[in-house]
Image 1 (tube, rainbow, N blue to C red):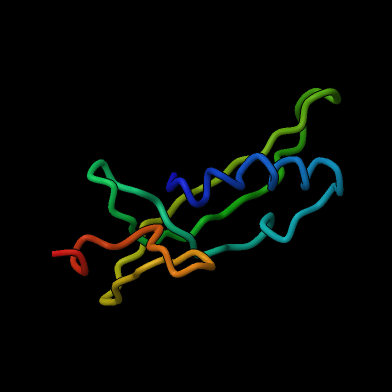
Image 2 (cartoon, rainbow, N blue to C red; image 1 turned 90 degrees about the horizontal axis):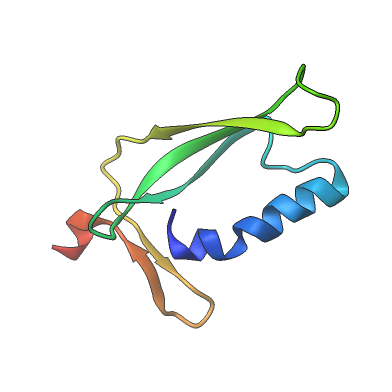
Length: 91
């Protein structure tokens, strides 16, 4: 998980638990993963509630699908700093 996503991950989870719903669940969202060299690559993220377990547990499952695309990506923060870049664009 890229740092620019992991830095807000816990806030997203807490928001889901406090509100009881999230726009991220039950649908797909294009986002990014990071490879072993630190380059980002696009994925589709699918999240779903998992019902049928213990009444005291909240479970979800997710699926990541690596996207094949001719596009290259650079992710910037609000100040123009580069947060992530795809391998082909770097080399």
